[in-house]
Length: 504
Image 1 (tube, rainbow, N blue to C red):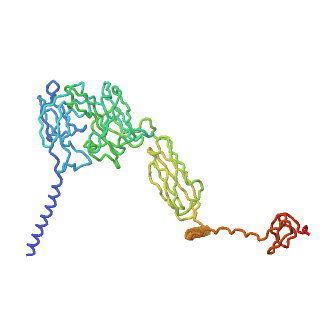
Image 2: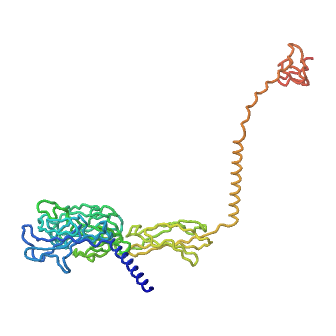
Image 3: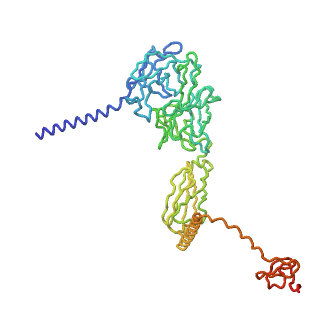
């Protein structure tokens, strides 16, 4: 009975594991079945192309051609020009969302597929016909080469500079490996953007001589992402009778580059199956060899010093502003150290900066490899020391190094000064409270009644006799000269000086 129970438990467990496994697998859709194109490849006059002529399919300048079997050359097989090839699709979930959103592996539903008699590493004729990609589709179609006058010349992106040493707009070099002069007005530069093949373009002008190259400025310092991007050189199709690609523009060269650490080319349709060349850093150029060789491999490119920039210049300069020499700073407070940096080769934003403070035998890092930094905030240690050192190191992208240091002091506030400060604060607080209380008391007092009118002066009772002597009334007598009442004991009038003795 116990053995039977164990058997049942094992069967149930296996069933659960199967459900989990198959349930998980059902969420991920298998890669879409490739589109098959078959027919005959013919020249413009209808004659078969030679046996072994390669036939390739392109979407946005990427060769997505696959053979019908391992080792298939995807070339014309016989004297009739017959061919058959596969164009794989981008891996999608059942909801038609990419299950590999960091890299595009093939064509998307509805993409236009171009056909070429080569891979654009060298001069490549382009067929007039195009197809619309759909999974599990068989397209039976003869292909005819486009007219020679409207077929693009094989120009190349020779070099890319995304971070010029002296700043300013990014720029590229274009090369012409052919033996004839080419009008650049027939071409433009284009980049992808997240979710679209057309993320912005720049028109070109002028001519490019045979076996020569030319510099072309982009329109901003950030037109291409410095961490990684995709750049295309596109032929501006004039159209007309027998135009290649049905009159559509044709990507003749495509370069994908990405930083080895923290690269930003991790999105569709920018990142594809082509492979990535290394991203150029400040003062560097991503370039082909002198012959402008193209094999559709990232190894076609290498990093070199930007044209016109010395391989190594003088060391960068750094000058500390705060603290000043011998400056005293208060302990246990926040302080902002600042400095200036400069370099003869690079703009200051490319310079790498380190900063540290040394107190005794302890070194405290404040900044570690910060590009272009000119200040840092530090909370000082709660110590008193007259020999604290701030050191700032600067290094340019080519390794030239410069440094500066400044000695300053940290002091703690003395107890006497602290007590005095507290007492002053207390006194100020008392005065403030006293003033507030007086103001409040003044506001609370009722208004005073209006003042009483002044009491009129009491009229004098005595009147001076017309011609007689002074008359005393209630201790007063009247001056016979000015008729003013004065004290009876007065010998003379206080006002006019009349002497009362004259009456005798």
